[in-house]
Amino acid sequence: MSTTTKPINQKAWFLVLPVLICVAFSAIVPLMTVVNYSVQDIISPERRVFVGTEWFAAVMRDDELHSALYRQLGFSLAVLAVEIPLGIMLALSMPAAGWKASAVLVIVALSLLIPWNVVGTIWQIYGRADIGLLGYTLQKMGIEYSYTGNATDAWLTVLVMDVWHWTPLVALLCYAGLRSIPDAYYQAARIDGASKLAVFRFIQLPKMRGVLMIAVLLRFMDSFMIYTEPFVLTGGGPGNATTFLSQYLTQKAVGQFDLGPAAAFSLIYFLIILLLCFILYNWMQRVGTQEVEVEQ
Amino acid sequence: MNDRGRFQKRSIFLLLYILFALLPIYWMINMSFKTNEEILSSFSFFPQHFTWANYARIFTDESWYSGYINSLIYVGINTVISLTVALPAAYAFSRYSFLGDKHVFFWLLTNRMTPPAVFLLPFFQLYTTVGLMDTHLGVALAHLLFNVPLAVWILEGFMSGIPREIDETAYIDGYSFPRFFLTIFLPLIKAGVGVAAFFCFMFSWVELLLARTLTSVNAKPIVATMTRTVSASGMDWATLAAAGVLTIVPGAIVIWFVRHYIAKGFAMGRV
Image (cartoon, rainbow over all chains, first blue to last red; front, side, top):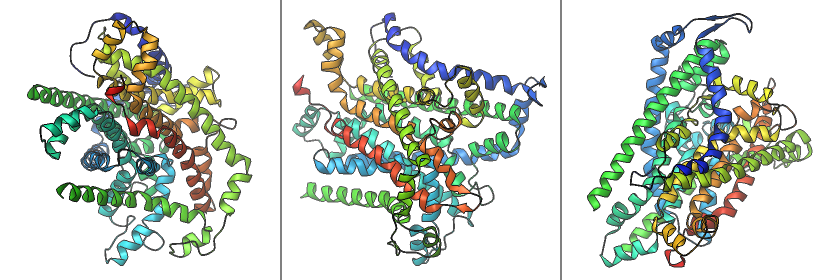
């Protein structure tokens, strides 16, 4: 949301109200229920004991959770570092109009439309050295590669799979952002004799700021909650090289059926994502407004 | 000359990316025309024993193809509701300040940040209580939780890029708000509407955990049907690949329809 001065109009609430009703319907009751779980020891549906913040304290001290959190942070940062620049480059190189633009748009969007469990399954075969194209090619090139045996290979495979799966989201957002820049801006730049780099830096990048912010936040929070794809591809292994937070949480919630601690874990997890997104959001907004000031 | 060199570099990059994007999908298509034995026994670029059997299984078994129909129904309902409620709200956020606007705007996005594992049980209880279990409407409403915030954020981003002078000029010219919004404003943010519609469709289409929790028979989505291919006797790779190929088709059609919205953008001259 831009920080420029806007007229104050409390009636605007009426335009927002339908959204609030739709979202609050599914948001508030489940969240409150999970908060309720998190302060109880649920032995059976009839026998519940209030335990206060005990689960929260236990979760905070959990060493396995700490290491899963660090792995998660490393993975999410790698995802952003690769997908955001790649997505911008892709958006810049996609044709602007004509049948080529339509064809490229459809091709780029394809990977987004595959259900996540299928994505994991396809890469499971694709990466195998005996029957999969990727594994087979790497082996023919003389590279020792096994996503089930080698921790680095497994981590890289999950990363490449995520890049393949989600870079189109960044690219499509940026592409739509680029397309809504009026021609007048480019004409003015041409008259000024601006270089391509200057056009990118002073016209395209500022105009893409809004969509880029959405892309960064979406990719950050979604990669922070990644579950299905690594679960299907590697099952979190080898060892726990690709056991990210969500998978650790699911092991706790479903595997051991500890509803209380799992609920406390969920809430802490949620607050971590919230905090990091809040920092990221405010930082990006500041960077954006400073740039505007420099230009003026 | 310099321009052409740059153009070629861009094309090469684009072609390389397209190759990277299409190869795993090609492998899935390749698998979908093989038998399970062939998939697991040897490496081949083309199916050696070409078969339509995997597709035939999906098109003749009602429990398979009804999954596609169910998914399409609730995804359609969800996309329409999401865009309808998000458009006015995004306009309000981009044009006015009001009490608590920034907090509400950020709160909306926080609804996408809840790790689903533990939240499934309360969702099940809530939707059972209100009698929406195993209905298309129920899944569509549950998916509003993450699609409405997304649509509001995307649309707000595009609307804020439109100078406010356009609104003011239209009001001075005597346009009413609905007429201004539908005939002048919406065409200006076509690209944003196209992208938002596609993303709402996509996120609802691939969502598995909520859709599976809230349905049993009548509204069972295709993504849940697919998990059947994992059984005690092993993995049915070939059927899963064929089902995967078929899940791409509806979304590809959607993006084909919205492509002009996304690709053309707007020209200031028309206003």
